[in-house]
Length: 277
Image 1 (cartoon, rainbow, N blue to C red):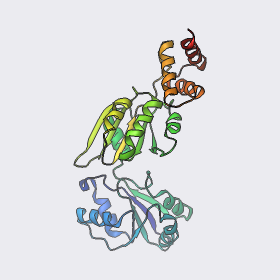
Image 2: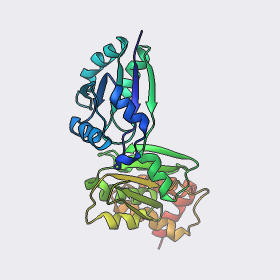
Image 3: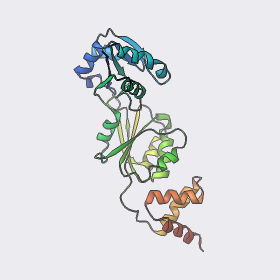
Image 4: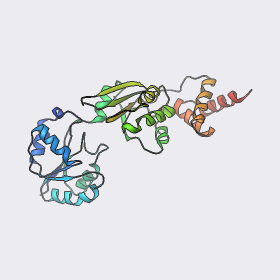
């Protein structure tokens, strides 16, 4: 007889968002695995929940070493409740490795659904949300390359970003995806100082330049359908802007082709025409 793994959706900021099922799961779990024990105790206090289960830390620096013991506990018939600091476990938070290990061990995996910054930001963004993709945290290195791979992505895109890297990320996104691309920065969702700032990537990069604090979720509109309607002079100016940012002529043309949807020959000819006296 085996136990089970329960993924618990923790509130993003407001304890009142937690329903009775998570309270019951916390009170009855044999093992509570969490990112931060202090946050777990604070959540229990806010929810007026008393738990008697064993508490185990589970974050990226220790998760590999914790897996055997947690799997063994579930195989022995215990229920393990996994909670992250906010939102749903496994969504850019610890949890995937434990879910995978439980599945491989034949242990039941279930959840107590709760808030998610991804869907919350998407819902309030005002951007199309019938189709979207979640890209997690923007890479610290190679940001422009990462954004370049998404130039032609037609779906609304959702990213996580740290506040001290937000301005640079928005500037790189504007350079690659286009300054006029619609975007929304959601800061401190559901918390006292919640802020939703809408604009273009260019305007948001300027807004963030003075510094931003708090948890950040970035929502960016997908690529427009069909090729852009630009004059040869405007096309050449787009290429020149890429070159000014440090790209080679070849890479600059490739970036403009990807961003505008225009044929490579059209972009190349526009650059040649602009260089011709």
